[in-house]
Length: 175
Image (spheres, rainbow, N blue to C red):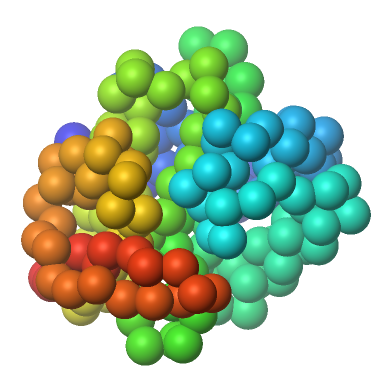
């Protein structure tokens, strides 16, 4: 069971241990640290770290995307401390053929079940609140922990795809 919060306070949802809220410009500092970590970035996007300027552009894009589309990625926070530990949410595939769920956590928060917890809640939010009909996830074939999270969300392997010259696995789930 997940609680969907009022948009007025910018909170999107909460789970047993986590909150998800919209990004703001104040999220830049922790986001820069996360995107500078090669272990975190190894399986995100093109698989490379980002500079502060690149991260600021990414953050600005995420804020604008949410405002424009009514959905997007949000900040994952620990309920007990309010500490930002990553992000999760929706975007379009690079070719805009599908809506993708994506997530990333700071390395110190891997292996604690947070990715599964927030991803399941966001997936349910997409289907029940946003009324999405189909959601996909892309993952590097070598990223077995993320494949495990995707399968725990109930998504099924569909096919291999290629974006940015990188071979990825595409999983999907329909309402």
